[in-house]
Amino acid sequence: MEAAKIRIKKDDKVKVLTGKDKGKIGKVLKVVKKTNRVVVENINVVKVHQRPTQANPQGGIVDKTMPINVSNLMVMCNSCVKATRIGIKQLEDGKRVRICKKCNQQIDS
Image 1 (spheres, rainbow, N blue to C red):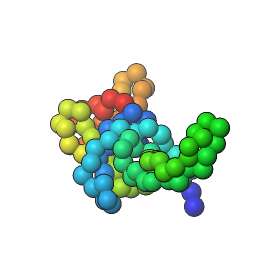
Image 2 (image 1 turned 135 degrees about the horizontal axis):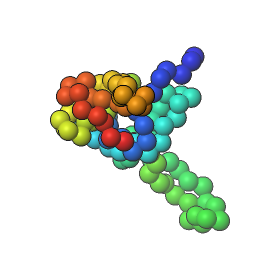
Image 3 (image 1 turned 45 degrees about the vertical axis):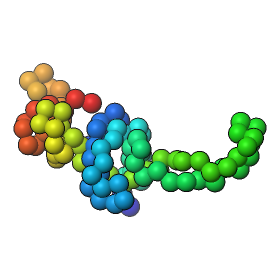
Image 4 (image 1 turned 120 degrees about the vertical axis):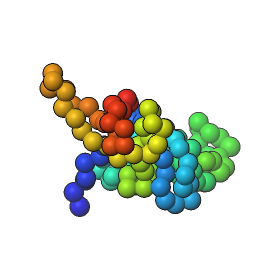
């Protein structure tokens, strides 16, 4: 399966559309293009059993943020403060920027 074009970038604010964290807003920590997944701060947190190591001699159960599929997220616009689709606009100097489809303002990363 070929990876789709991901328009979500690191440090974007995104809103979760589906799943157990539906409606929550978080900051993107990491984008995994190969699997079309994104790690979002405090979203899709699971309990993981940690075996004892030298760094963590106690071991135990820890919380870990797992990746979520890109299709379950929407970027939040800073100016209209809504979840929106993203468009690409080319400026006069040849630079390409992402814009909000609702208010046509530039989305800052």
